[in-house]
Image (cartoon, rainbow, N blue to C red; front, top):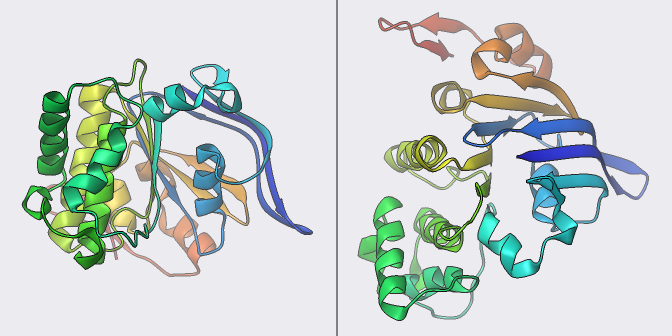
Length: 252
């Protein structure tokens, strides 16, 4: 579904990212994890086309640089760590910006927006001015916007999330991750998310990639690679793994 070959990002003399090959399958929720400064956001921005890179990134066997802009917008969306908007748009109006690549009636558009707002727990914010919202509320509104944007994808869509739970309370963190899991399982989305909570990665993600100094150090299921030895090596933290009564492994 998504293939990366010979991806290289440079800033001056510093190599930010060097990935010879990486492949993501449709219908999978993949976490990108690693210590601070390891290249996680750079990877997301490269796939999104927000920064210059050398190499080849293919979505559905076509180089992303060759996709027509509107067609690409229907199939690839990115939710950055934070979004700035100085205009006093309402939350509903911000989400309506996701309609740009779609062919849809006004009535259907309103229904679609409300549906995505319910899914992201922000319908009650419809009339609120976006600048007045909390950081977590803004992120959920922006998540609803990108879900609207991907709603007419003709092939399996790709959703990129850069720390989507960072500004959320505990309940909303799990609501967002549950939604991501459902999008993968029920609608064949591929979701690639930068996450920091390793227990959430263990609980929700199908695969994870550990980035360290711009290189993919590990790529496998969370249960395989999130060992105490790997955690100690990459994060310099002596973790313990314990099993709960239902055999769930928890990292402490």
